[in-house]
Length: 88
Image (cartoon, rainbow, N blue to C red; front, side, top):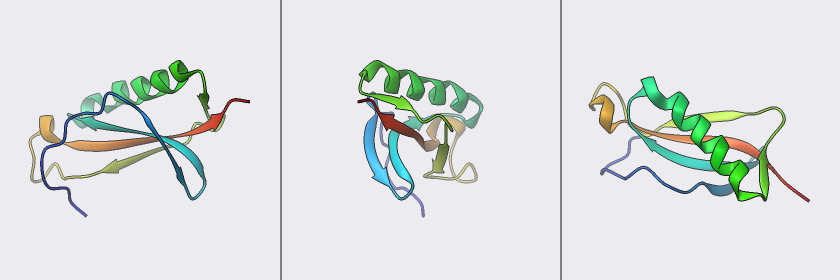
């Protein structure tokens, strides 16, 4: 499934419940070479909420919305999903 359009990178992390638990979701726009920095940014944003922490198993899902075959690296869109736990 491809994505049409040119969304901006999200500056917020949204919480979503998927099969398997609660996840934080962050949209990253840019090269796959720097996606590691975006993953760390996602973890930091989760921790800054003070309401959630990354799950102890640190499950990370990367969903690629478009293809490197049809886009420049700067235009690649990746959704980063990090499994989280709600603090008591």
